[in-house]
Image 1 (spheres, one colour):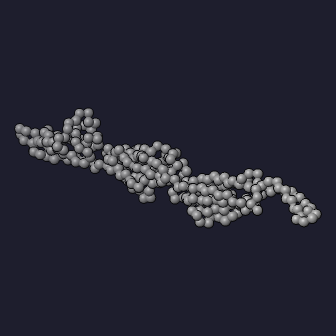
Image 2 (cartoon, rainbow, N blue to C red):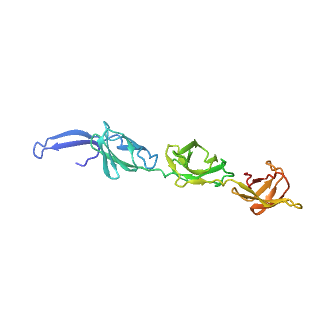
Image 3 (spheres, rainbow, N blue to C red):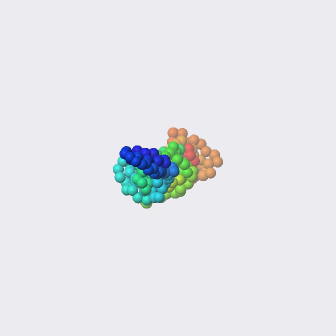
Amino acid sequence: SGLKAGFYTVSATLTATPFCTVTTNFSIVEPTATLAITPSHKDISCVPGNDGSITVSASGGWDGGYEFEVLKDGSPFSAYSSQTEYTALEAGVYTINVKDTKGCIKSTSVTLKNPDPITLNVSTTKPMLTCIGNADGTVTASAVSGGQGSDYLYTLNFLSENPVISSGPQSNPVFTGLKAGSYSVTVTDGWGCSETSVGTVTINEPTRVEASLVLASSITCTTDATVTLSATGGTAPYSYSTTADFLTSSPLVGNSVTLAAPVGENRYYVRDVNGCN
């Protein structure tokens, strides 16, 4: 026993007369190549996910049909069979054993990993619209990482509507022309995995600019009447003009001003620092 592969001669001789001897030859053969197993795999695409796969092939040993066994994290997963492709796999350590026709076994292991979760930040550089009713807000997705690591697409979710309205996807992480409301952003990578921002961005709008004109003093035989013009809402400071086109205007210091009012109709226009009127 315990012989290597090779060519052997065995002789048998009688221990007594006539001391005849006979000889025979035999060979012990071995496989032409060492049994080997070659795996390939695809990692998990999304978190959590079960779309990993492993494909195995074998060579060497006693060829004539190989069988494969799979263990996951040390526990039985797939019994010995001719199956060579395993799909719908979750993350974990898979041990693959291959057995040839004479029961020789070779092992290897494959680790399937989950990708890093997709993370992102959302923010706005314009938390307040210029004027009430405008649509000049912006939302930006930044610090995007995880998933495939590239080929990101961005979808804007307008949370203030019911149901939620989404726009996109687009490759640009900046969304412009937005009205007041709350927004989130969903990022989708090149594998089709998505993640929505945990935080939301709220874009506000100023209150409407309101002008008030009241009689401060009545006209006399020697003096004109006076009126007090004041403004609220919008964004201070304010300016006023006697024409709607504001070709000439004056500041409204302290949100109000008292003006002389000659006989007749006196009309004034007010706008805030952003030009809202």
